[in-house]
Image 1 (cartoon, one colour):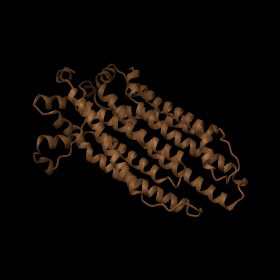
Image 2 (tube, rainbow, N blue to C red):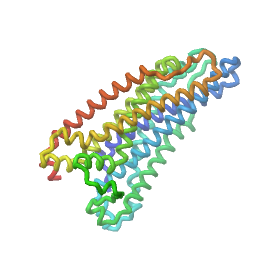
Image 3 (cartoon, rainbow, N blue to C red):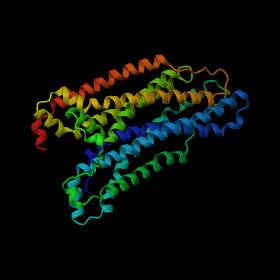
Image 4 (tube, helix red, strand yellow):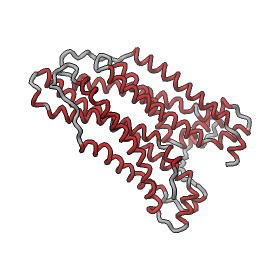
Length: 379
């Protein structure tokens, strides 16, 4: 079995997410390790309060951000492995028919973990480059002794090697589980779909309404990604604007940059997959005379409510995270500004989100318009 460069190139989104996760964790965990080493040299009460606050903040940021990004990477990896198996069912079925065991075929999926390794290396290198400036910002009050970043081999091993091994094993195990299907199903590219039938579903719905419902229900993982992209945009942009008085300008830029990268990468990946999964449906709609607008509203428009829900969740998430950080971790630190909800930031974030989201939807609706019925039906 050969997994080509083209297949691995599709994992670019995983590389970006891994890069962001390791970049954040490398900065804060490396700083925590170094600042703990100079704890005995901090002599002022103000310095000790700042020390406790920064150590706690580092743990929260690394835990929350790193944890969310790890979960996202797991879901992305499973999504790509599933897509590969679904689109290469015939080749995999032939290998099983020739006597290859499931494990013998599945073990080749370890290469999917390379995307995590590449992203982790890039993120760690980026963190090492930015680290001196980060340390300078963290000690802008001059309450700590002069401190330079130290290289910690165990931290590097934990952030580069362990995640790579974990995701390689995850890819192999999931592929092993996924290829449990009978050979005939793989050869015919028959996928198991669980359909829950209720009395409500027995009621006949208008075609376009039913299509929207089916599009959302058939690929729930894409629903997650669309919602997650809105969540990232909402939480990170509002958080960066709310932290003007709580953190440095460079920290705010780092947050908004990571948020925008994650938001747009996951949204573009999701919409591309949505169109690819519904090309035959779009072709049939065009044959029966449905307009480009009706196709777009049915296939892409159904994700609009999902994105708004993700935006709302992101708004509450960033507020409660900052509220907890200020009220708990910085409660004993003097001169910390009182935090309140930033309504202006919410308005700016929501307006820019709608503009960006609708522009992207418009671009993808044009892709639907350009789809050739003949080329789709000949696939």
